[in-house]
Image (cartoon, rainbow, N blue to C red; front, top):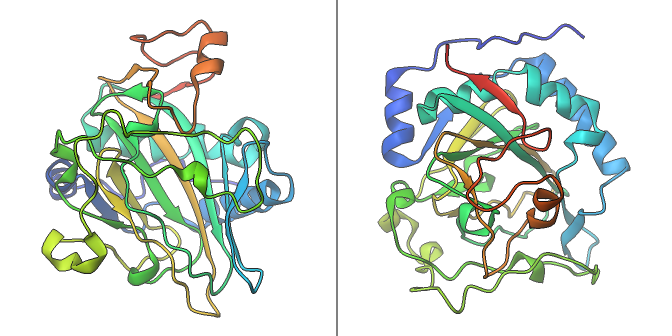
Length: 288
């Protein structure tokens, strides 16, 4: 399969400003059909042979599920090709204004048609084994998604210094899988999250109708959640990648980490305060 490794269009100064100001931006038509087909094939392989980190987050009485897996890229050729050859690293670098971009990890979210499970409101970076402002996620649906079913965001919340009581996603484990990463922010949290669902408009919540090929890029400190409550004939298949810019350093958090990379980082000779790198977190883009 011949794939276009270049940006299909320039990222505009307005899009960069939106990302910097709001912490999130929609980028329409950034990946052509070839990339979507490649990732769809990779996701099918991932679902057929999940990693030992995978689990079901939700299973209802009708058997509908929300499946999650993470850090599968080293075993799935389609994911590796996307990470190293697609424009994704450049997109992250241009939006964050970074000199170098390292890949962090991948995560997939697959909801059965009609699933009503919704993602709890949270931030990403407080869970991670790294710390820094220049971290972002590229969120890509591989099927059409309506605004009310897509991930939603609180613009500007990435600039807050408040430490919120983050949700323990280890609780999402109806099958009782062992060795699931856990977090407990009770000793450091300053506030619980406000009730965003009660009045989304007062928080300026944004989300978008999206087609395959569109992506949303968001700062990993932005408050986000809410994706779900699908129509009975509509599934949701999402591929995400996480990217690290210039100021990111390794941090092992006493509150727990999810996913917890501390063991594998240590095995690779990485320690708190180091810049993530080596084969585990490869550099994929540098500004000319």
